[in-house]
Length: 144
Image 1 (cartoon, rainbow, N blue to C red):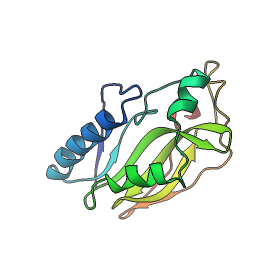
Image 2 (image 1 turned 90 degrees about the horizontal axis):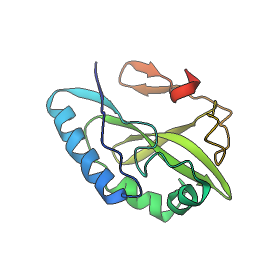
Image 3 (image 1 turned 30 degrees about the vertical axis):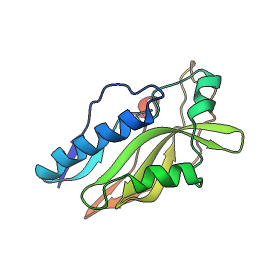
């Protein structure tokens, strides 16, 4: 199985730019036979650790706004893992989502936060995901 890791520019509060870049990277990875493409921590909105900025761009994974993001993901091709700022009620999380065929497969919330990440709450669970025959888990930064 081929896995692609995407090193990208930072798209701070530029959802349109991030989604456009993701589409280009996924197209290239697909051409090279990748079945899983991983994007960085905080990819979708930028690695924002100031509470006001993070709250301004955070996405509820059950919201219409996140549904619109999913609708813009490639309908076929590799499974995607990308970082984003998630909100659930008033709580914020540094999250990585797993998406396949424009559908949310699952998420992982960063468990071991850095000192400058006080606007986020720590995640408490870890899932195992499958891409073809590969079983994988997700760690973000200090989690490793």
